[in-house]
Image (cartoon, rainbow, N blue to C red; front, side):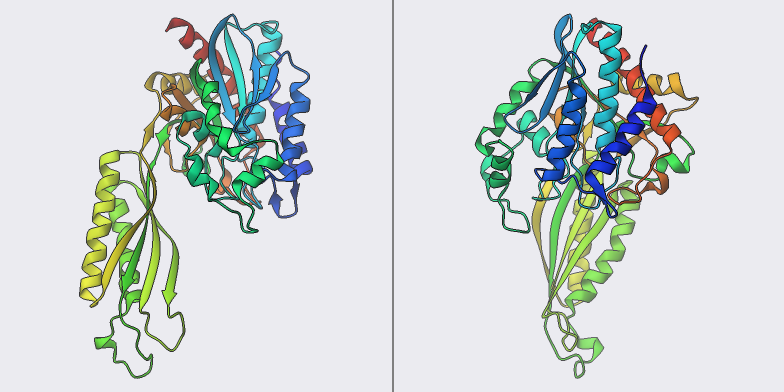
Length: 412
């Protein structure tokens, strides 16, 4: 019908102009730029026969009422990391907007099932360090007491930031009401990795999101003078950490996952002393829960080994974890078919990054994602980009998947 994928590309560019600068996107959640992005979307939604609400967690919902109360959800997020890319999150949302336009015209505002577009609040977690805030409120996996302790770099609490946009943190769990009629959830996203580009494919169907284990690993040695302490008697905590950092590549390869040491802190932290304490952070991810558990066990064993060999001790601290989230098998098939409707070849791949889709799936809603190729595999960066032809194909694929998902809901 009236699907116009180029309109999505043009609106993405307009949003970039409105809420970005020479350093990239600046739509950090609950800031003025984020509110401007929300106003941009709301203005577009006024042209459609939809009902728009903001739920108690701050998520924005646009509902196109259908013949059935069962709901097909299409999700995205307008918030970005500081100096982020122009497509991360916003493609999902504006592509969903274009699909709503087509449905409204084709069905006269009354499709077979109710279709809802959601702009999740603070997917990125860039400001307060807690990703998937809005979707976890809706899924029932949000701890209000824990989030009340969070503050940004300026000392502003999450609760204070929410109050400025008309949301009370204590009310956020009430967002669960929004999923009560959800029958399926769809999300389109840039891949944020190099797999599809390496295969010269524009689109892929996502199998699920990696499970994540995040821990601190702290090696304890002995501070000693850099000049007078022979190398063979040093109890150098940094040396143990360095040996361990090499081992994580072997662990990742052994289990088909990924491991990352993201930070390293040393004490006393001066050039004239052997390192007494070295704390590193370890992020491990895998789509298989058993393999993820084995990766963490291997990491602990390796840390103990290198600590012992270096005359040091080691302790472990838990930061955060989430189980692997597989997506719905039948919807993965539908996503594959939708891609093949618009391009000759599809590919199935897992998602290393977390997405709001993972929280919706955790709530028991059948879920699937589409990925579109990312140039150079780069995201969370002002040079983030995707070929415009591929962006248009992604909107078409999401549209095809929407029809297949509505048929699927109707048969269940």
